[in-house]
Image 1 (spheres, one colour):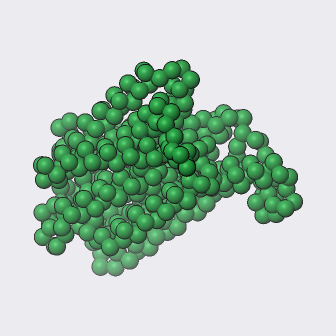
Image 2 (image 1 turned 30 degrees about the horizontal axis):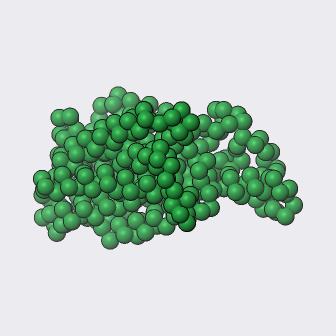
Image 3 (image 1 turned 120 degrees about the vertical axis):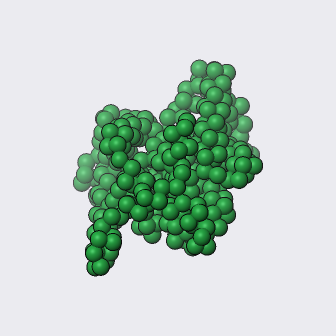
Length: 366
């Protein structure tokens, strides 16, 4: 626990060393920016390739020719193939991109405002709270009168917001310091994980199966009714943070230095905290608990483009989408004829990466 709070202290040397070659020569900065833009472009190309692979793969075992013919000349394809491509695979792919981008963005926001490499929506309890809300809705069997398909997502969204309110309340009482927010988040994580266990213990075997399936996380819940909701939330949150990009970059120098150049640190933390809640709740409400995306994607992005938020934010979103889409492809390839819940696959990807960070034993990105 001490290491968590210690990691949140301002690391001015780490922030300065994130781009060591930017000051080594008078003309090095334009070259550095060019290299980072090339990496950003290569990331977009990689994402496009994974999107194509995700659409081409699936338990239906359709041939590449059938998929391409259905995409470009749907009138010539049979009705069953059109349903598989346009009503199942495309919504799943779009949801994977949006959820990955949302969690990647939320993760980099959390790590920036808290100055903690372990901060993410998952490790601070937001995803666990959403899981408890969904499990409670499944256990009680409640249903909204007009839009029953929104019952479980809305319950997950509300509980995620409730967890954020708990963390915010404790942090507000102690001055919104990063240490208090991290500690309150960890306490919230254990609280809602215990609540999840209690709900599962009380559930019947049939209900327990539904709860566990939701908690695993799955893109099979994606549809053209919920994809636009996640897209709107991500777009609005991304637009809301644009005026604060330079302030977020300055925050990596530490609270004191950021305040000295005109950054309202507390107001910035409150705003970003609210955006993280919206991004996380919107992402996990429809697909279930997804771990490690918000933790892994920002670290990879920071290694590639440094701390400049003008590049770090889009790179984190892209890396989140790449990780999520790659996990979707892997979940369909590992079990031919079936789909492994994507939450399991993202955990299998995230854990080795955390071990990699530990074995590197470096703090140059922090």
